[in-house]
Image 1 (cartoon, rainbow, N blue to C red):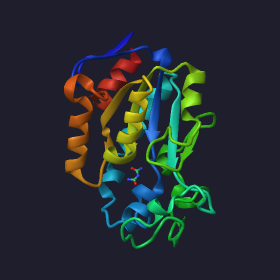
Image 2 (cartoon, protein in one colour):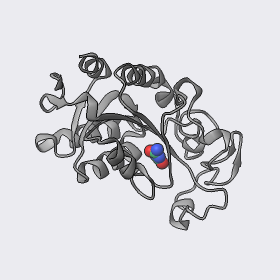
Image 3 (tube, rainbow, N blue to C red):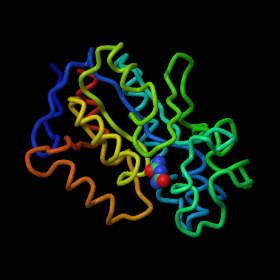
Length: 222
Ligand code: C5J
C-alpha cells in the first residue's frame, strides 16, 4: 500500500494499482479570458495559476502508470442536454451556447470547451464530457472506473466548490476513497475553496482526504 502520511485529517492509504487521477474541467472556458467563467464576471487568473501544479500531478500520475481521466463540462450543440434551469440562471454576459471569442460557450467541439493545451490528454487517456457539475451524472465514468477496478481516486481541477466537490461527493457515495490535491484545485472565490477543503475532510474525512501535490507525488513514486 502507498501512503500519503501528511494527508488530512489523517494518513491516506491507497493501492496504486486500483487508483486513478481525475482532472476536472481544466478547460479554456473556465481558465482563459473570454470563456464562461469570465462571462459570469469572474477573474480567471487564480485558476490559470494552478495549471503548472496540475501538470506536475498529471506527470506524477502518468509516471506511476495510474489512469489519468480528464473531464470537460460541455453540452451538445443543440443544447438538448442543457436544462433551461442551467442556461437561464443568473445574468452572464454570454450564456451557454452563445457565440464568444473561443466559439460557442461550453459547447462540445468548440475551442473554449477544450482542455488548456498545457494539460492536453495523451492518446489513450479517457476524456469524459459531462453536462452536469458531477462527473458521474449522465456519463460513462462509473462504468469505466468499475471496468478498471478502481477503488481510490485522486482529484484535481476546477472549480473546487462546484464541479470538483460535486464529483467527490458522488464518488464518496459510490464507495470510492477520495483524495483532493489542495494546490491543484482552485475557485474564483478563495473563501469557497477554503471552506470546501475544510468540509471535505471534516468529521473524520466525511467526504475524503486532502494533501498537497508534492506529498501525493512522493506516495505515487513509492
Ligand atoms: C462551474 C465547474 N463552476 N467546472 N463549473 O460552473 O466548476
